[in-house]
Amino acid sequence: MTEDQINKSNIPKHIAIIMDGNGRWAKNKGYKRVFGHQHGTNTVNEIVEACVDLGVEYLTLFAFSTENWQRPKYEVNSLMKLLVSSIKKELQNMHDQKIKLTAIGDIDKLPEKVKNQLDEVREATSSYENLKLTLALSYSSREEIVNVVKAISQKVKNNVIDVEDIDHSTIDSHLYSHYLPDVDLLIRTSGEQRISNFMLWQIAYAELYFCEVLWPDFNKEHLLEAIYNFQKRERRFGKTSEQLK
Ligand code: IPE
Ligand code: IPE
Ligand code: MG
Image 1 (cartoon, rainbow, N blue to C red):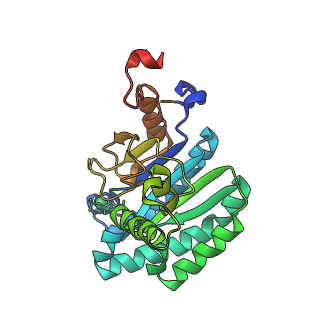
Image 2: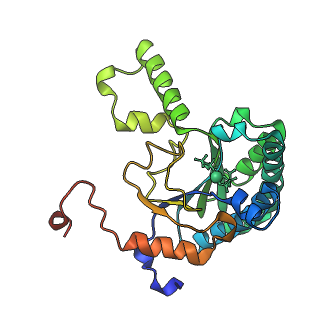
């Protein structure tokens, strides 16, 4: 698969990726799981760069779920350290490529060091428009939706919103991801075919793409394959094929 097989006028606007398989990748090689996470950061850099090249507007990466807090303390700590170091290390690259970094999830739950590093880079890249890169951290889609319900209920109670006026856009505007468009293409690596509580509302009409490759082995060519596959599909949004012509 090469870049010239890709139709440049039909690049998914918003790609979201469930980056899975780091632990298995390391274990297969006889290493500890954390080694896989370290290698996974190289993949992140390659994929971010590929998205910039292709003109993808939004890339959202599932990096740490609310459920992942239940992992062994050593692994959680290593992941947090890795987050700080890789965000820090990539700042210059984000400046060079005009990448805007944001985050979704229960950010307050993250250790102070991660929050500070994240804040610094979010602020430093806030004016950039090239690729909007979002990290889902301490993220749970169900929790996000519960928060939306709470926020809207409060507004109804305070007569700020009328119940009758609640529609899709009301929900959208209260999500962590309120500034992101719907996901067009959702990729999950490592062969698992599940969503694991990721952007349930936002993927309502996303094209789902599952691939066997473990995240540390995923590369630009695999991404091109996913986009190529996406471009062969007909997105009907409930209409008939004829209506789309
Ligand atoms: C994905 O890889 C990274 C995170 C969830 C943080 P995993 O750590 O889930 O790797 P596997 O699925 O156990 O192989
Ligand atoms: C989903 O992967 C979370 C991230 C990729 C950050 P998991 O490995 O945690 O998901 P399950 O537990 O296999 O569903
Ligand atoms: Mg996993």
